[in-house]
Length: 172
Image (tube, rainbow, N blue to C red):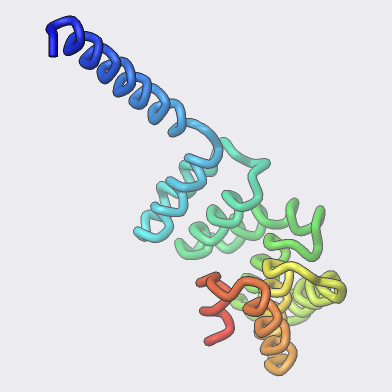
């Protein structure tokens, strides 16, 4: 090969590699990247980092749920409840409502917990997706309705047989 050919190959490689680095750098700044970083921090037990990452993302429900779990793990139950309550009131059958109900049950506030968890079961009556069925199964477990929980989780596994979270909940 001639020098010119090698020069073109090297120039193409350099441009491709440089563009790849630019794209990788651009991917690390969006809300999805913040959520992924918060999930890594949660799994590592770095609850302070989760709270820090979630601080500027008040409209992101999954990130707020991680923040509330972190606050509860650090003993700040009031802060966790305050973070969850706006999302739970907007969607009484959603993930934040489930987390709020589980938090209330953990604190021994049975009447409030039962109200939150039953609203999830009511919302799941026509459930046809795996996340909805998982939510209903976890709510039924917390209420002590184990046969109902088994039915919801069995249906969820039928829809998403490889989902680790569903299989774990069903195994519990």
